[in-house]
Image (cartoon, rainbow, N blue to C red; front, side, top):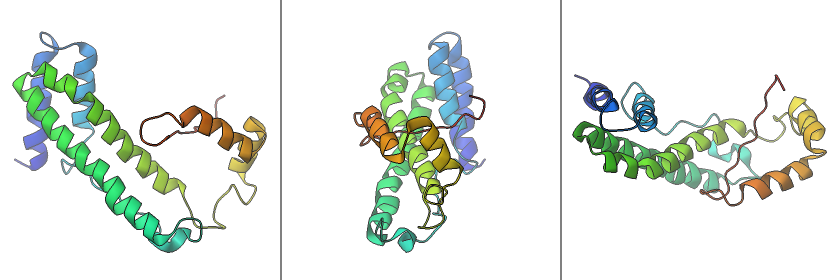
Amino acid sequence: MSSTSNLIKPSLRAAAHLRSSKISKELSKSAAAWLSAAPSGGAHTLPDLPYDYAALEPCISAETMTIHHTKHHNTYVTNLNASLQKLDAAVSAGDVSGIIGLQGALKFNGGGHVNHSLFWDNLCPQGEGSLENGGMLSRGIDESFGSFEAMKKEMTGKSVAVQGSGWGGLGYNSKT
């Protein structure tokens, strides 16, 4: 049995068994979603960057990129995997309090991992971005906010109090 099977399958069986009698449907769905979100190797991993650590200089130094990727983001990945292992044990044991107690760590570390993965993919070396080249992103920001500076001000105001140093995301829906 692979390490994935050792971790995921017993937890899903336990979650399915507990679903009807010990935990709410919402909590059961949340636990199952986290368990099933693990990659096929059974653990989340730090993604490789699509560019060199020095590629964003002079805006972001190679040292800052190295530290932020290999230490900061890696801490989220490490803590997410540890929390998922604890969740597996809690679900297998039917420990509802343990499951509930892990929600904060799962949200914080899982969110940190997802946000950083998106962050790395949305950065690019100078001259390669559609914002500075007047592309679709630049036009959309101008149409929605009036200017890039106005967007920064509004986004900062809305995200400054968010746990994790003010992470905020701006999405685009082509249907609206």
